[in-house]
Image 1 (tube, rainbow, N blue to C red):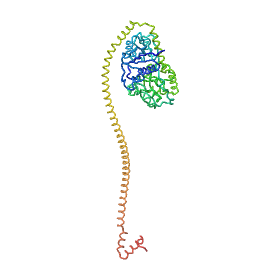
Image 2 (cartoon, rainbow, N blue to C red; image 1 turned 90 degrees about the horizontal axis):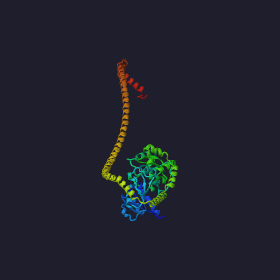
Image 3 (cartoon, rainbow, N blue to C red; image 1 turned 60 degrees about the vertical axis):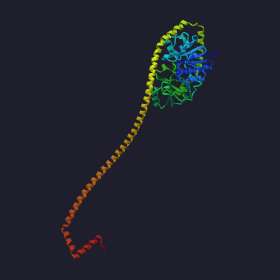
Image 4 (cartoon, rainbow, N blue to C red; image 1 turned 120 degrees about the horizontal axis):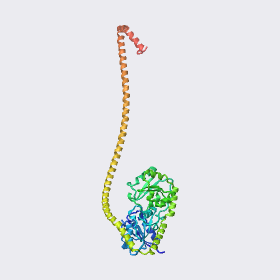
Length: 475
């Protein structure tokens, strides 16, 4: 069979959301298989940046247009993502059949356009399948499920996981401190796991996640991001701003895959306790088996083959059915009746958005100023705390010194009192001795001694005897 000319639509290529990456991978793989993909989008974003999806597609030689008049050949099939671009392409090429892919349960742009020329509606999981059938009235025979996939040539297996996780990654464009990031940070802090964050909301977009995922043991993610992490061999806990799920294990893999590891698997309120519980289920051997099964069943080559087969089936069906011009016109009228008022609302919302963006920019400046002031205040507080600690230490030292001085003073006081007592005692003894001396001098014996000493000869004899007795005169 010859290659097909496939026109792929998407509402935007300005970022790196799930469908934008899906379009890029699909278009490049179709080109490699010998088909001719063309990508149509009215919001190309900063298409001149070397790391943009538009530039990646152009480097890969996939045509990217924002005006359908630029396409000089009629496509064989229209692969529609998002109803505004899909309907525009279907009306621009009224002789071409289409298929429409639904990627989200809630997004307004994933509302399926009900046009007879759209042969099949495809959900990327059973949640989207239910949306197509049970919310928009599309018959089951026109609905298919083709799961998301991974480019296995890019997302190569990592080395064996360690016995316990050492490094973790939050891999999501919605992760921020205003959504659920703090809960993940708290859980990782409690379990001793180093954590990094990749995503638009934290200003850290990874254009080549296949180059970094292998550096992590545990990844917090959902949907396509979770699938890529599993393909590499990381353990994965389902988690996003809408809620938390479980650690992906072999026991739950089939059921979780049915729902694309998406919104239906994120039914629990995010909390550090819940995440710590799921971290406790980490099993490197089980994660390796999950990875093996994903690589066996979720490769991009197989998915693109399935999509191309559906293209051919849609083309064949369309060729056997005449175009019902009236049915087409009524479908277009119903579409316009539904969405034209919404586009009026859209203009109002755009004006509000523009105002909010200006206010957001102002608030960002104010927030930056407050952050600087907060940092300054924190530094001052830190300085004051240091000074307070120093003063407390000095006070403690002075209190110790004061206590020591008090103890010394008490000791000296006691010694002083003892000395005073001894002085009083000595004074009393002195007074007693003085009284005795007075009494002695007044005694008859002393008076006789004085008289004898006054005698010339007797006095000398007594003095000599006294000196001999005291040893002052030698014999």
